[in-house]
Structures are given as C-alpha cells and as structure tokens.
Length: 259
Length: 258
Image 1 (tube, rainbow over the protein chains, first blue to last red):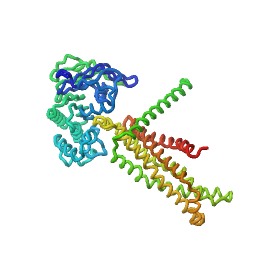
Image 2 (tube, chains in turn cyan, green):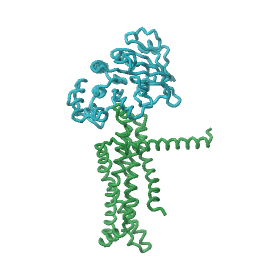
Image 3 (cartoon, helix red, strand yellow):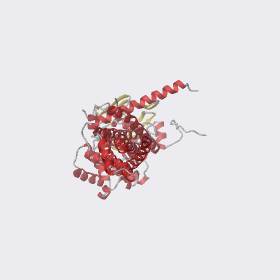
C-alpha cells in the first residue's frame, strides 16, 4: 500500500433500479486523510454511491476499493470487518428509537466490537461531550431531542468507535442556518481530531465549503467535475456554476411539469 | 385492451416472484436462528411482548370460545341424545384446533402488525441501514430474536389458552347445562390424549414462527414512508392469518391423516 493509493476508490460503478439508471460509470477517488464532498441535485445518485461503498446496495458493474481491497461481494464477516473502519451520519440521523441516547452512541462498541456496557457507556458520555451534549442527555430517548440535538447524537455515534472513514449524508438538511454551522464546525473539529478520511454528500454549498478539502459534482450518475474546494468558484464548468449559484437557468434542466 | 391471458400470466409470474422472495427471506432468516451469536436480552424482551402482553386477549378468546363450544355441542349432540359427549368434544376441540388456531390468529393481529410496523419504521427511517454500518447483521439483531420468541412463546400461550378454554366449557357445562362437576371433569380427563395437547403445541410453535416471520418480512421490505409501513402492517396480518389456516391443514394431516 502506498501513500498515493486513495483510501476509497470507485471506478466505473453502475447501478440501476429497474429501468432507472442511477449511477452510470461513477468514478471517484477519496485521498487518505482528506475530506471530499460530493455535491449535486436531488435524485442524482449521491446517496446511492454512499450505500454502494457501505455494501447496503450492490452495483451491477464497476469496482469499489477501500485501502486497496475490493469490497463488492465480500462475505458477511469480511464486510462487517470493513464496516468497522467506517462511521456514518445519516440524513435523518437514524437513531434507534427503542434505545436511550447513550445506548445509541455506544451501539457499535457493544454490538460490533463486543465492549462491556459499562466501558461503552463511559466512551458514549465522552463522545456526547465532544459534540457539546451533557451526560444527562445520554439518559433521554431520541424522540425527546430536537433535530439539531439528534444530529449531534448521530455525529457522536459516527465517531464513537474512532473510525478511519466517516460518511456524512446531508449532515445539515432540515437544520436552521446557525445549527447547520454548529454541526459543520463539529464535523471539522471531530474529523481533525480523529485524522479520519471523510466522504460527504450535500446540496448545501455553505456546508460543502466549510468541510471539504475537495469537491466533486455528480450529474446524471457521473462525476462531471472534481477539484480542490477553493477552486469550485472558478471551475469553468457551467453545470457546477449553475449549481453553486442556485440558478434555475443553465445546462441542468429540472423536470418540472407546468400546467 | 389487455390480453386476459397476458394479465393472468403477469399475475402468476408476480405471485411466483413474491413466493420466491419470501422463501429466500425465510431461508436466510431461519439460518440465522441456528447460528450464533444470539441476543438473549432481545429474545427475552420479545418473549415478554409476544407472550405476557398477549395473555389477556388470548385468555378472553379462549374463555368465550369454551363457553360457546359447550353450548353449541350440547345443542347439536342433544339431537342424537349424545349430551354426554360435550366434555370430550370441548377438550379435544380446544386442544387440537381452537386453542392454537385462535391464539395464532389473535397473535397475527396483535404481534404480526406490531412487528411489521416497528421493523417497517426502522426500514424507512434508515435504522436498518444504520445497523449494517455499525457492523450488526439486521437478520441476527432484528429478525432472529423475533422468530425464536414467536416459536417458543406461542406454545406457552396456547397451553394457558387450553386450560382456560376447557375451564370455560366446564363453567357452562356445570352451571348452565346442569352437568355433574365430577362427571364432567372425568369425561374431560378420560377422553384427552397426549397427542391432542402435543399436536396443538406443535401447531402453536409453527404459527408463532409464521406470525413473526410475516411481520419481519413485510416490515423489512416496506418502502414509501408512512403509507408503506401501513401497507406492510396490513399485509403482515393478512398473510400471517392465511398462512396459519393453510399450515394448520398440513400439520393436522401429519398428526391425524390416515
């Protein structure tokens, strides 16, 4: 394994649902220790790309590597070993309603790594502190938390096992701008502390600018531009320009039915 | 206009595909029932939910079924001057058929629906995907404990239902129809065979498994938000109930077929 080898590599990935082609030769490299953000409109295949890496969906064609190891079609035990390197923050937080907050944060430690409950609880309380939540929050149920607090708990769960890779799926969706910025700051600080490689998907440009080292844009199941985050404003790509400025007019045509 | 044969063909293919999906899910889920690791805490929690909390509804069903059975058998048998068979037919009817089938159907409504709703909500809110990312197999964590709890708990419920149902028949027989209490109990005891109870308990175990399996299957494959979860819940109850009735015939054939 060399330093030049990306932490995650996706090449020629195709995924379709019935007649609908979602990923159409998707290529992406995520360099080790960097934060890559995929931007793109709704329904362009961002979440599907993440789920293919996680093994939740299986692509029809193409190759996905993590640390140089091909991860498509791995047996369950090997897949679980790969997933132990990964933490994930879901768009809707996806906290387990039947468990207390601390149990949610400690879940991967107890179930995935066999840690004792008392030890896992201490780690969970510590991680909740890192995202600005007190130990008393650990005893609550997820339904008793606001959307912003749920996102923080989901972030604590994603970093609890100190993973090498963290995925963020629309981390700021549904939050007010201030809370969104708080979450962005927490993501940056947590990732820096862990030294993790991260891959995020978002259509929130403020979030992308804040957390990304590199930005890639997906359109119709393909990456159409990628580069350093600071160059996104001078990409020279009309699709990227239209997206980052949120213009209705441009090469990206939304399918809107007008009566 | 659609060709009717093509419509029938599409329906048949769709049905076969659905059966294939269900068979694969059942095989996969069952394989996890027999492979560690197990989650004893989750199994006990599900046993409490399926068994303990279903006791009132199953008990009431059994009691009133015993009442009605005694009255109906008395009415029917009196036409042939065979009133003395009431106790025997009540105990055989309850232990072989009505106990397991009615308890299974009540469970399909109460527990099958709850499992489908819970697992379905976890599916549409990405909680099942979250399990996978936390290196936890959803079949082991969600499905297997419910299947084990269903198969172990319904026989216990049915045993209680058998006792309550027979007691219901006794109450009506003695206090309403004027049977001698001792003679009624002696008839009950004399006619009851081990196979009557055992076949009922085996049926109960199969039905408990079916109810949990249908709840998990429809919940696991639900999609489309609240509407999808509602559809999964309905399908779990309907398919669970129908499968109980179909399976009941085959298990009866195995035990009592000539």
